[in-house]
Length: 256
Image 1 (cartoon, rainbow, N blue to C red):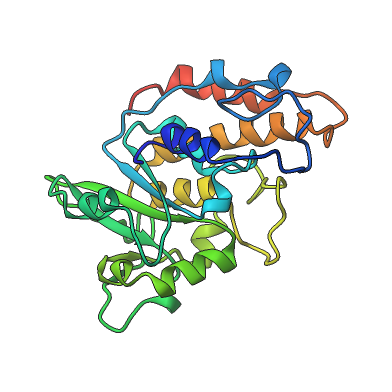
Image 2: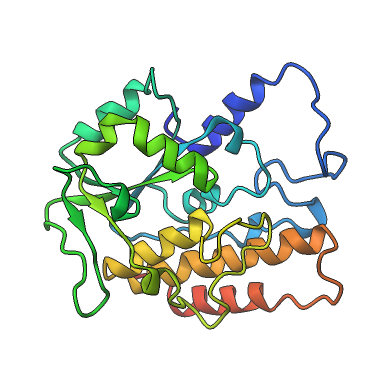
């Protein structure tokens, strides 16, 4: 499976019985997974940046309504998604890594890099990530909890031969748009400073010199978070400024 929506439907088809879970009685939009009255699908706009993403997803992550990996696929058409498997990696994923069209990079902290792994530590403006003109950067993100992602990387030798982009803490904490460092209150991380998958992707884009694309994704993330929490009644007073800010950004920056 190489498309997130296709992967989602495939994973959904494997559910043989209803498993009680929090919020299961909510009437959700089947696409954005937010309650229908607060659906964001009509706001979605794609970005034409010359960039690609690959989500290597923990099986348990795919069907979670709060998953933010799908937001990357919403914004960037050239987004691939695969179920992670240590012993039986998807052949399509392995073929993707060999595709001469792309230059793959694994996004992960340098502390986990293997001895011979090439590591880049891009700093916007001062030391931006340089990518060959004839290649499209393929940013690989491990989509799961932090503990799961660490285990996924350690046990996947195929990832150890891919150049790594390691984001310094000050870059991860840097604001993309005029909001708090992280508005990800859908599922609280156990460690301070850990960001949602979509937030990390936005910061990678900024480090690659794609400022507008980074802002586009961050704005879309803010819309998702606000509407999702509004549907959960985590927000008492209605103020749809994230959507208004997003639309204003789209109207002024639709193309890079």
